[in-house]
Image (cartoon, rainbow, N blue to C red; front, top):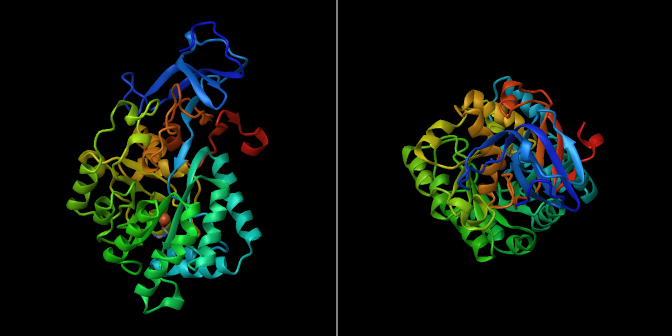
Length: 422
Ligand code: NIG
Ligand code: FE
């Protein structure tokens, strides 16, 4: 800990912070926590000190926050960013009354297969930049719009250029050339396609839903991924009740995503898979994340917004003791938003989350869903990923929906250039 008056080489002091959301309680326990009238010191890529502004140490450079709020950078633990084309017409038809079905994925598959690497890379980088501008400093990125060995392999390779959190989602839907031979496609996804994708991936995902993959097919895909060193996550219970959540918990998935249609047994399974996160999360300088082994319920309200479905009931999950994350599900079909602030606002307004719960779920919750101990919180040892709002408190993210409140973003201690953010 730095003493008063200490100067740190290559250090930055952000002071006069009106509200510093740390997500670390005074006892070191994870949970929403915020310090009024505070300051924070960054040294290289890490947070070195947090505390009252009146006791802030000196540093090489000083930024005056002028009473604004500072939060951990958002952690978007669910996004599909490698694709070509768009489906604005499908969205408009839905808003006019057409239902959403998993089948729309196939039109993006056709566009993605037909696109060059340059086009896919350009689109991916544009979305990654769009996220960073909006305060997302860590994001996950799935394949799943290629669905051939070559197209899935290039999807994960491209994703790995922009994030370490790459997910192999070869089992997104059965592509039309395998229509009527779903098991043959599952064999491909568990065999040569996985072999080609595993070297670039950290995670394996499957869309376990009517119209996509059954529980047994999902288990086969996840087991094959685990055998190749990947950790499961599952698209579960998005379009109706089903086995996705129970498969996710049974397989030790890091996350069950969507969780829109849950039975009491699903809620119990998620809650009992989510032990209280111990102080330090089982790893030094890590309130959660690194040592965490529960299955997080990741809610994706952008998808319910974009498909006119009912929102998932976050309150029911929270009251049962489940760990909840919020993410965008950014994709061209169900949820073409990259805005974590928008998801926070929806969660507060329509999913019965408090503003503190929603901000925690969009930062620390996302970190747990990615089993990351270095992000989603702000205290000594955390990665210096922070967002300064043009507002005095985190509540403004829901209180002023749709307003661009991101004033400044730091990622790994480096300020994202003003021209990039503003
Ligand atoms: O998470 N549910 C499956 N996959 C995406 C939708 C993809 C699409 O419609 O293109 C989702 O909502
Ligand atoms: Fe998704």
